[in-house]
Length: 321
Image 1 (spheres, rainbow, N blue to C red):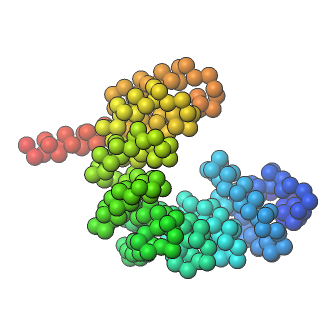
Image 2: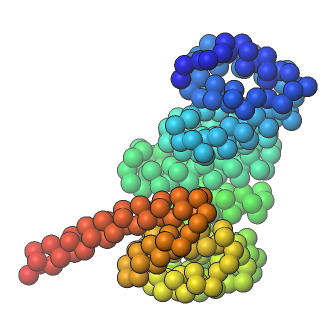
Image 3: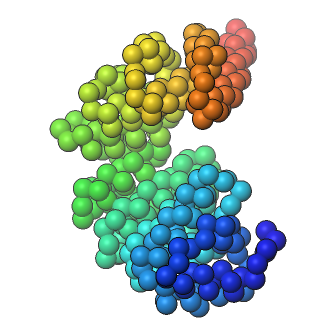
């Protein structure tokens, strides 16, 4: 990205604790040139922790809003930062990065970091590599190493948060040890554990969890209900279509309605397109219009995928005949 100001001006602004860091400078941390990265790291020890964390939070928000930005270079350099909060944000800024070179750093944090939140965040980040391993996008030995460490953390992690994040991360694994761990978590009374179990179910690509997820769609706990809706969508659970359409009629909370709409867009099938188009026709809020249009685009993808799966089934049946 072309620099509109000298990068030295950006680092000077970072050091100016008396003035809020200009939002227009955030983009300058994307795809840093080596010299600019060196400049940032050179002044980094002089920046207060409060300002460091505020900057990293702003970068995370920008990355979510603008998918063309990438703060990987800075984040990689900060994985070994002496401040736990900085290490945690660094991992989060690398959330979508599937570079196996990150695995050793994440495992080091998971197993030996002095900060439990950083360890839990590293566990979550390793979930990306479990999925990548299941679809054979990373070496099998890397997958095994990640799985072994997550299985250990899920059972013996120092805190409940670490154990839950490890369980969520290992959810995509086809290892035989995983389903019993998920079911044990689901059977616990604590809402947080049920949420984590549902999260892992959603990542599992396994329809065996259908009855568990359906049972939580009407749970009075909003976190549990929300995670059940997400899991139903991720698994494309046709059995959840009617319950979700019914929920959409009565739900007044905007965020929960969005969860239901998106879940339906991932499931598709009878009545879904008509309902989403009906909502779009009567919606006046621009943000909601944008969201509903995005959901309808996702529904197109779901319908194409479902049609492909149907044709594949019919082809296999013809071959058998």
